Length: 178
Image (cartoon, rainbow, N blue to C red):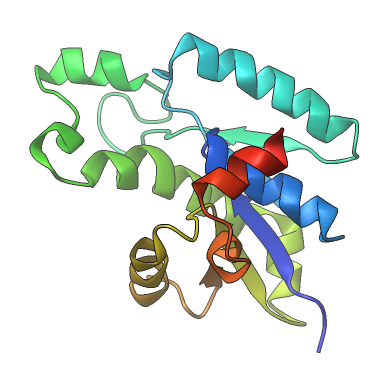
């Protein structure tokens, strides 16, 4: 069986950064690293994306950035930052109401679309598995279990949380980055 294609959903935080660093330490090179930009991230997040993107490039890896592009309505084909979308609709992100709609729409959907369209992923489906890695750490195994259980596309990929498998909690994540 062929080695799996490894795709990392990069969130720009401690855990997903540690996931990539530890994978490289262990000799595992991800095939794709993807960040979904809401257009409304904190300025220090954008600064860090540049820094980490350069760190990855020095190791022959690319940080891919994708966004939620509208497929329907007056804004079809356009990107509108999350804060502008909220202003336009006189609303706040659904997370403010304890819901996950924003995460799905602004993070998961753009990354899923990006991943599905990559030739390396399309080709991989003819020869072996595709793994999606996410940076849940060993202090949050229930989140990893929920992600694996709710996989909406098991015919396309499986979800893994290697930090849980490697027993790396928050403290270990910070250490590996240092």
